[in-house]
Length: 283
Ligand SMILES: [Zn+2]
Image 1 (cartoon, helix red, strand yellow):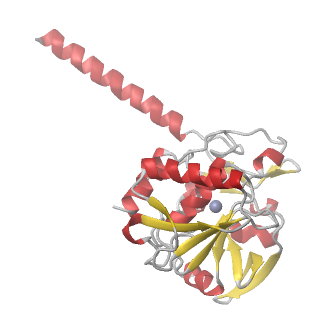
Image 2 (cartoon, protein in one colour; image 1 turned 30 degrees about the horizontal axis):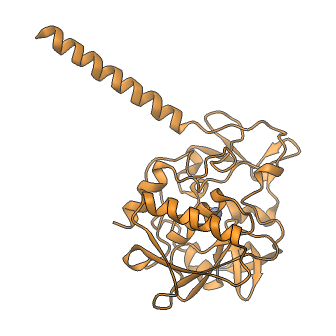
Image 3 (tube, protein in one colour; image 1 turned 60 degrees about the horizontal axis):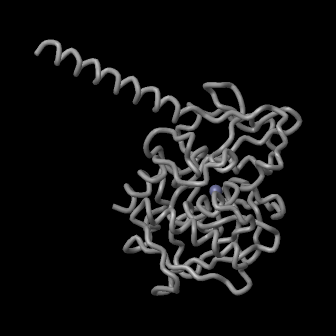
């Protein structure tokens, strides 16, 4: 009996160690070498959208100007001036909830493909939707529902961007890159996710080199959302570091080095943390 107990305890300990190892492995940032060619790492960035300065709540914020009263905040998040004002005064909201009432009713997201959206990108977006639906409670339904829906198109400037959560009425979703990981990332915003590197506790995991970031791009690194779950290096919502002239805008505090994100590492799928967050939000 004693020996059985001992064996069981050993098995239990072995399982524990295995879980620890697995957890550590999951939590390790994927490093990139300083000086590495950044071209391959640019899939999420919107370099061709002009920048403008908005004065919001008495503060100057650099944003991408999409025209028609739409702006890009935090890199690829579509906002109006009103959204931005609400957003900046409510930074400690829920990770997957921006200023309340941003959930899609019945966990159902309606969408339409704009005319001229290429069939190959259409297939990419449909694959991304199938991936998300198979792992979460979210459903994607083609059509306009009751008038709240996502219009999927390609910005001629090649941008990738989306609104966080349901905006009300027709909302923008641009896929410039025909890339599955990018499509899942942008759909993550549509569902309601913010960026992992923007969460309020990120300074315990990531060091921002503010001096390496042009002043008109610093708003891309503002904290938003909340700290749902543990900081997730595998999240598809994490941006990679960008290195220019040997200096990186973000480095991992644990390694002191720049890091890749899921897409650049070839992991074009939601992490277990992303799935848990979406399912917690859409119970
Ligand atoms: Zn994004």
